[in-house]
Image (tube, rainbow over all chains, first blue to last red; front, side, top):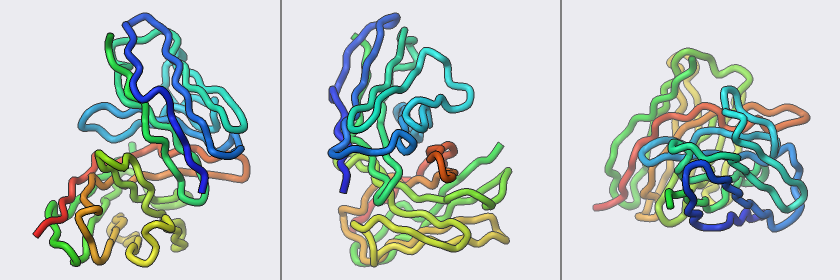
Length: 107
Length: 120
């Protein structure tokens, strides 16, 4: 079973700064199957990115995804107050596994 | 605008069967994969399984205890988890995705989630 490991566990930044979140797969995976979600307290996750780099409908262009093989990155170019949340990566496949999440909080 | 709404008992006794329903409004079941996912503080997000045109697939870690079905006439998706233990305590979500030969398009619509506690 492929394991997704996200880092860092917590990222403390200020509004206006750039956030870089990592998702590492335990073996090489297809770019077409990697997605990113944002979750705020008391809410369901929200789809941000599919196929590693394609933005979901209506997503601001400050969010971008990249990567291939075993290393994938979600970048938020300039943090807005509403971006502070928990972010998960997920892989389509045998058990549709999720990473354990990165908490992005306000410094 | 498709909306999903989970419902069911918030408390289930150990060894009993957890039964949840997801009501789909504003859309149909056609072409989508309909999923159940759960979230615990300790284990994070865990995919439970999906149903797609009657075909089901379940997380191997739960296989044998899970049944997902659809009642299209009622626009409802259901989940049953048998022989529950405290480890099945979680927030349970229903969600949908599409895929084709090229892409997995991600879980684009989710319900708000329903909290289930397993306790005597």
